[in-house]
Amino acid sequence: MKLYTYYRSQASYRVRIALNLKGLKREDTFLHLEKGDQFAAAYKAINPQMVVPTLVDGDIKLFQSLAILEYLDETHPEPPLLPKDPLARAWVRGFALVNVADSHPLIVPRIRNYLTKTLGLGQQQLLGWIQHWLGAGLAAMETMLAEHRESGRLCHGDAVTLADICLVTQVTPAHTFKCELAPYPRVMRIYDTVMAIPAFADAAPARQPDAE
Ligand SMILES: N[C@@H](CCC(=O)N[C@@H](CS)C(=O)NCC(=O)O)C(=O)O
Image (cartoon, helix red, strand yellow):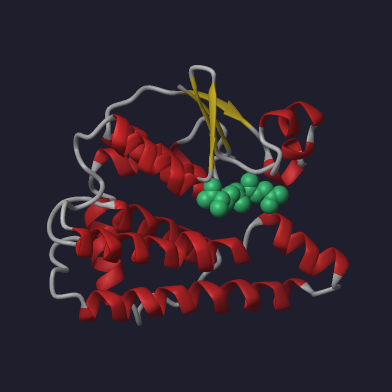
């Protein structure tokens, strides 16, 4: 499988973790998002949205990290990334979407560039925007974990699910953008637990060959 990726991309990070958990090898093609590689015509022909990740499996191109994670889970069921029970699956997907659908899209490069270059926000205002939206997602996750009866060593029970992967990609940018993390002890306990798992640690931005 071929992965179009960028070391700091949280969406690519999710896919790297899932591939590692499933024991699947990948061939990386690196795009430098800060230098605008995603806008090259050759990449636009691969991914019309001009974002990473794109996963190429045979002659099929796959987009959107959560769809890719579910595809990997369906085609390589072990270890499962979703619980069996429909209610539990819905909870895990809902938790994951706090990051994937609501927090992360507000802080990606194209949004940051629009805020600064088109709307004229200063760097401090931009940082405030990022910290605000990451904090909102972290607060929601913390409350969800406190309320979820089946929350255990990890988000749902003791086995890794999509929820844990997306918790990591909420916390990683919160570190980068220096968010206050003390108010989220449940989130941080789970983050520390999963980052001790090699599949997670090896997928971390700093461990990627294109890391700067
Ligand atoms: N919802 C998409 C997000 C894709 C996305 O926005 N990726 C970012 C990197 S994490 C990107 O490529 N941004 C390029 C840009 O904003 O110009 C997913 O989960 O795959």
